[in-house]
Image (cartoon, rainbow, N blue to C red; front, side):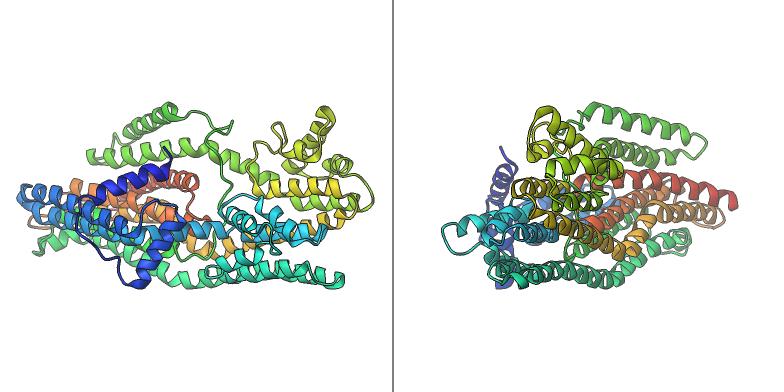
Length: 572
């Protein structure tokens, strides 16, 4: 059963828990929810989704409230508040969650817009036919290319290419994409002297549009992320040190209240703020997608479990000289962090290899294109250029030439076939280059100029991606450093200071063990949430990349927390 099928069945079953009719908000919210569910191919309508959210919230309340009532007296009110907060959160997530998820997927899809337009432009340089350019661009990877394929299919048998309707469909989310698509289509009918200028304007439209939108987003996100950093991280950690004095002063503080605030409400607020920021990103440049059946991805379940348990045991040994409560956060953070890093490490290795292949594509295209323009065959141009291209890119060209010679196959098969040099390299950019070289092998010398032009386009695409990450570097760098180092360091130090303050006060201070467990749990949750946010802002929400970086952040957070606790304890 596919994922949408079982998910739709689960939603329909949960909807039966709420037999009453529901509203989906005002007309605009209802339309947004319907569009989001359609885009996600959810298989359920808006009313069923909202009823499922209400039904789940009712189940949470029916189960949680009685448990809160029979809980020990100090836990009753915090537990009841937590149950009601979860119930209302579930009901709200049913209304807004699909919209946020659809927005995130559109954002990831739009990251491929410059590459898609580049494919269409390059095909037009070889042959000025908008239908073939649209079909060539649609053979790329990702949701955007799949949507273009659908528009091309609908345009078959008509004078249209599908580019105009495709651009119009995405105009609300990316106006530069619509303008670029229209320019590519109009270039087919432009005089030969104007065609190159029109195609250059199409590339400038999508590249400049992406660059400007990312710069505006980076500027607008600085204020909210600063507020998130101040009120969600620094202020809560600063208050930890004064909690014992506040308890002695008569404020009604208790460990259950502290757990609800620090380990439920604050992390929930961080998650909500992170989602709010992430869905406003105009485009994302997700890393290459690695299939689970990739030959470099082994079965990792039992080794991952062993790594997690082993890391947890080592963490326990490291905390032997420290207070007993420190073993629990170290065991949880160290074990889970090591397991996540081990689980996603093979995916990272495959992606690093794909990035290495992409690193010198510009040089490869220029050298091959110049030889083809000088009447050399594409096959011989690839073999001759391979020794002149550095790194993994040159090795790939050499491997392609060897496959051509040994198996006597064409350019496409040598690159993209079952035994091709790129068969196990999940790089859309490299595969697009291979497709163009295969096309050039059929067209001959006229395609040489297009190959050289593609070198410039690849360089432009890589520059836009670098600039987008650079625009966000100050924001994402602060979040990552806070998550893995500074926040946990401050948390550990404040717990040690609170311990010293409690020892010198009169009355009934908060127990250090309970305080340390509550704060360490918050620190680990903060490390995971802020790292996921930083990764989502920089590259889009990619499960493997987020998992790997969260694992590293948890390991760093555990070490920083202990360092802060021990260091402040010695200083005190």
